[in-house]
Amino acid sequence: MRINARLDDERAEKLRQLQSLTRLSTSEIVEHAIDLLHRYQSERSRDKLDALLSSDFVGCANGPADLASQYKPPLARDLEDKHGLG
Image (cartoon, rainbow, N blue to C red):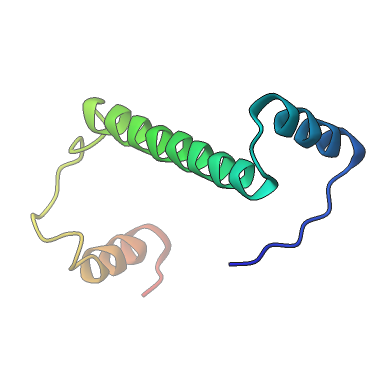
């Protein structure tokens, strides 16, 4: 894939510094940056999921076992009871 990007002066200078320090091409630096950001986001998502699953939030409600797939009848009944809506 070909990428055409505009960088502000600060990021352009950072890129030049990275090229000088690492002797990597712009393409290689972009590849490394994408890999690092992808790894960071994947770990962050996994950390959030782990936190949610280890909390008492998941499975804290009572209701029918099939509520996730059959929610409309109970919802309609509760709305009718609460607001007179059907």
